[in-house]
Length: 313
Ligand SMILES: [Zn+2]
Image 1 (tube, rainbow, N blue to C red):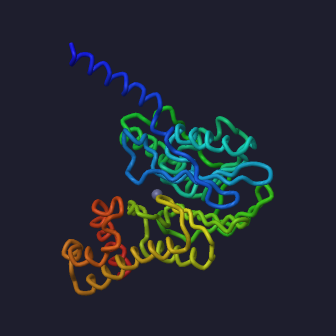
Image 2 (tube, rainbow, N blue to C red):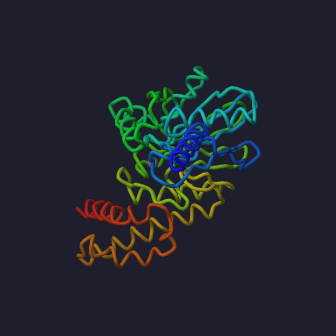
């Protein structure tokens, strides 16, 4: 009997947890006068984190709210709207999607349902790739990784195409768009919010998280971070991990540079990628505790190796 009571109590507790919901536990951090960021978890999308892993952010302008990367599902988008409403009653007037990866833009759905007039901006290659099947692939991948926790999400693509170099005035505030060819992907934009001198890097920069680089150029990523450094932003909002200052740019630049330069050196010595790995691992001791390091190091070395090999011909 006792056992049965215990089991019933457990069921009640787990139902309550389900009702409370994982996404209820997150809150927006104010990082400058007008900018708020919900710092997501560092783990890959899974059933218990409901696919949430990025940094959805919002900016309160004179006439409305500008959103950056509303997250991996309609549910993360709704969480973002909940946090916006704690700060202002103004509508969302614009959204920026930093790149093609679905953990950043699938939350567009929630924004469009509540604010159908909001302009949604992304690099023109993000828009064309979502239209030509990548959008569905990301929706399916999120469903699989989270065992259906992201279900209910519909693909809402950006309509306002960017190519980099634009200076936009939105809600009376200024936004500069930066694109430097292939970096984390071929679709990346960084957004410099001039009012508060805040740079949103997308996944060109991360903090305490080593990310997948299957769509990346290592050389292009290093150059993009050098471009980011030249902008001299006071505050850096990375694609994953906590917001900080320019030290975030230096730290991630160093990871990519140590990796790329060592692969290049050992490539010249005719070493294979798996022979290099034990030699490069100790060089990256500052990053051994970063989430994803163990899973990604071998893949990053192989990726950089192929890139260096292709450049050698
Ligand atoms: Zn990404």
